Structure formats: structure tokens, C-alpha cells
Length: 355
Image (tube, one colour):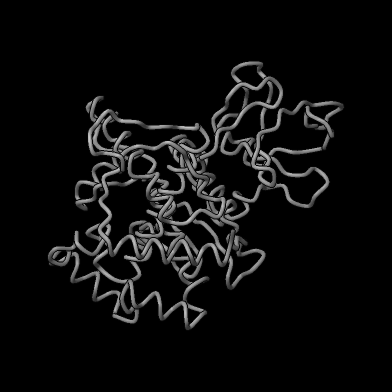
């Protein structure tokens, strides 16, 4: 994630800020400019504080404390690009649902920010019913008695998320029961949107599909049967030599989605380091590969090898910081050579289709 600042006083602000902690200015994020704008109300109209004055509105979900993005007042949209993708939100009269939904929206906005930076196709199902993207955020207290539990997943451009994932205790219990090294809201979003972009970027093009199968395997293998085998018997032997995670070995679609999510993790890590101008120079002999003298902008046409070279020392550093605080590794992954080639395939595909 980039560093943002209040354009009224220059104070650094977080991506989720609604107000500047320095000068108190009301802030909104302008997606088309990837920046925060200080805004003020004059005669009932919101205007950006910096010239040229422009009439803006907060996204409708700002009234619920669930969004800080802006839309053009003279346009026809009242929901921002991120919130327009919502098909279903949980019943908000339940206080726990409102807090969970706010947390989920924070993660989704980070996802949408990265997809915009990548320049990938991003249309709602209202705009494109067949190929668009949509989100259902469901709570089990709103599901009928015959509907069964809510499962997080993707189907034909619709991403469903059980809002219980916003509860850290629920998420940790699920992480342990599933034997996962990592489970977060943003991780869910990045994984499920990977399934979506497989359908949009890979499947329609025979040459791309052939290259994908050569690396990830043949997705025509029965998906339901493959998952049954995985949950019954566990991952394949020595999965660490070929896959990013145990779950990646279940089926080629899951290998793709896990690798896609990881690709987006890496972009975020390296973009943050680039924005902060981070440098690393550990006082170790024969450890030049752990030095980071220059950072790279992962959205600036950088090759995957440069991104990975920057990510390695960064992840070692943040893991060491976490261990010093008695916390688990923030980045619990190892990248064997086959996974690097899968990341390379995704990076080159994204560069052709987006940035």
C-alpha cells in the first residue's frame, strides 16, 4: 500500500482515515487519483479544499461508517467503485453485523485499490451481468433454516464471504482446524478474486490456458472429487517442493488462486517498502541477498525477479520484528522454484492485460 497524506496540512494518513489527525480536516479518498482529498462543506455542497474546487460526495456507505471514498457530485453514481460491487450486505440492525461489515469493507477497498493499480478489468455485474464482479456478504443469522451454513467462495464472478471471518476468534479457530499458516480477510479476497480472473484472463484464450495447464495442472480434473480427496487424505506428499501451500495441491484451480493471492501479497509488501523508501543492510557476512539498497515500484513495469529480490529481505525483517514481539511470522511462506515460475506466469499475464 502507498503512503497517503492530508493535502491540507501534509500529515500522513492511513488508507482508512475519515479525518486528518493533524488539522482535523474531513478526508475522502479519490479513487481515480489514488489520493486523499481534504473537503469542506459550503452551502450544502462538499468541495475539495485544494484547487480546482470540485463538487464531490461521499459514497452512500459513508453514512454507515463503512466507506471513505468519494464520487463526483455531478455524476450519476452514489456508490463508489468498491461499494458498487456489493450485491448483498448483512442486516445492519444487528450491531455485530455492522462492525463486521465495516471490517470487511476495509479489506475489500484494499483489494480494489490494488486491482485498479494493476489496471485489470473491473466491472460490476450491474454493468456486465455475465462477466462482471459482485460480492455477497452474508451472516448465518440471516440465512433461512433450510439454506445451510454460509461458505466463503467464488462462482461465476460472485464472491461470497461469511461475515464471521471478521471475528478474529472465529478466524483463528478456522485457521487451526484447517491447518492453515495464514488466514485473513484480505487473504480471502485475494484468493477468491484469483478465481474470478482465471475465468476472465486465462480460460478465454487457448494459448494462455495451455501455458497455465503446463504449470498449474489440468483444471478439467473433477473439482469436487479432488477436494474430497484432499480433505480426506490431506495434501500430496512433499507438497512443499511444488506448491505454495498445502491447499494449493488440492486442485489446479486452488493452486492458481493461492498463487494469485500470494502475488497480490507480494505487490502490497513491495509497494509499501517503496513508498517508505526502505533500505536494509544487515551486518552479516556473505548475506548480500538480504540487503535492500533500492526499492522498486511493483506497479511500474518491474519484472518479477526484481519484486522477489526486494520481497525476500523485507519478509525476513518483518518476520524477525514479529518474533521479537512474540507474534507468529507475518509472512509464513517459502517459495520453491516451481512456485516462482507460477508467479512469473501470473505477473507476465497481468502486465499484458493490465499495466
